[in-house]
Length: 232
Image 1: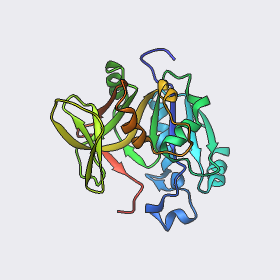
Image 2: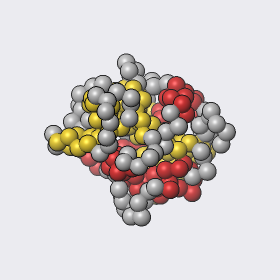
Image 3: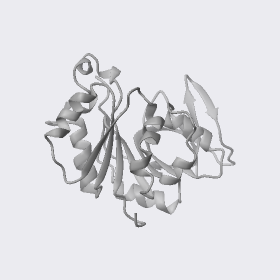
Image 4: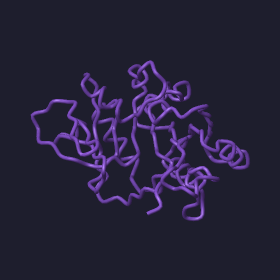
């Protein structure tokens, strides 16, 4: 892929959608309607508008219904479904899509239940400027699981169950901020993934953060952002 343009993306949509039950007992989260379209269709159209031409979608819960949906839909982008026999987690899902993404140079990862007007072009410019292996979209808002960053936008740690876990070292002041479910990754990331299959991508970032690779955050500021994966 030529520098300066993203063409590949992955939509994470394999989860059970437990926060949306009972809706998701019979409908996969990706197909819950929002603004007159299934969640996943809104994300796909946004990615296409950004210039994405190849999209990978991981599936598990009620995967046959997602397959049926795509069998009758055509988009101005190639969409590949990757079924997970068992849930692999956000990190394992990305690792499982390696053959579809590893030659991309950089690729985008987008949660299926995130709705936002974030300018992905500006985020990608920031990613390239920082030569990052991973750039995470973040925003100043209330969250139960904030990320901990320094004043140079480096990812340093996270808070879990009210405990601050600091993984990196920095002489700069620290602050807390909320992850927004969108990241841009360098395909170099596949060289660092663990041997096991099921893992969380944020936990992986924390472990990778002690290496020489650059993991940064991109503050989306006052952009509209909404988590559609919960009922309230």
